[in-house]
Image: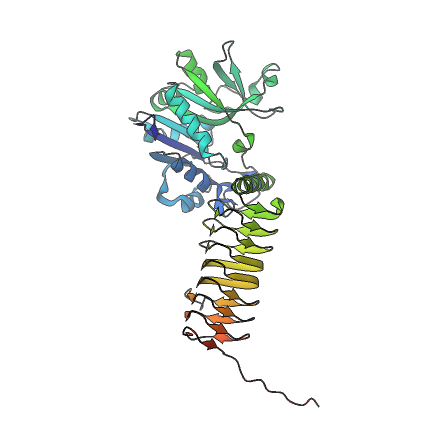
Length: 422
């Protein structure tokens, strides 16, 4: 990570060993998804995006499921006994030994922290020469969270867990998010001194703060501006809540950048979507990650824009349309009741109602290419692979199995026969 023009060594340790029994699932809590991406993968990508030089995942319960998601993108430490957060970090100590720099502590079930928040945390820790920098929040109802204990000068003295807090400490509204940036060497030194002298009989990572303060080491905090960033997932209701928060955040981002969303509550725009100005998104529309949509488009209602789609300017995607792995040129209309998969459509075209690309032959996905200014009649089937040239007309009801050259009409249907009724 570059701070003030200097390269800084930063590691991240992700806690990913918990059981997550409240999810009531045979799957690890950490492999449940928000917008098609596993919780733990979101956190791992976050660690990478802030510039971590190494990422370590501390895994335990159903570890093989977590490893199957993360594969070789991280290094692994193993926590077989769940003896607290301090104990979890101890399991990753072998990767920290001999390193100088900062280590960020994250949680695999706290997946929607903003990159800017974590970068601010790390930058403050480095610039202020703090040995521990905490991410804290102000809660009107702090029940259940560890309280931040400050001295008269505002310096952090300690963190007291809810079950160990006295009646005065429970009145404190500043809480510990559990997310930290530590000096690596001093963290390792402090871990040697923490003891399970608490109501839970666990090794608390929070005890590191008091140990550092007792040594006279400087500590500090960053108060998060948006408390939703530190929300975690323990059950299905919280999973839905975080999905809702991320939906609102993503939609707000696009609206601020000139996109009209007619019904924010029924529009689901996943991460990493690019949408041009003056595009209108109509209700009940889903747009998946990686999609690029140009300016002045109309999308929906009831549209499903799946992965790997690139949509040009002034394109109309109408109601009950599903597209996947498709490139659509400027000013083309895809009005209603259409499926396009693995296709490329040129400019100034019109795709008739009921058209589908038959892209899967049972073994392989095949591509349909449609040129510029093509007019596709209703209820047309394109049996891929097939290429349609420029300025082509495809008659309604045709099943196209062969290429159609430019400036031709394609007709593929039986001659109509009328018989007298008896």
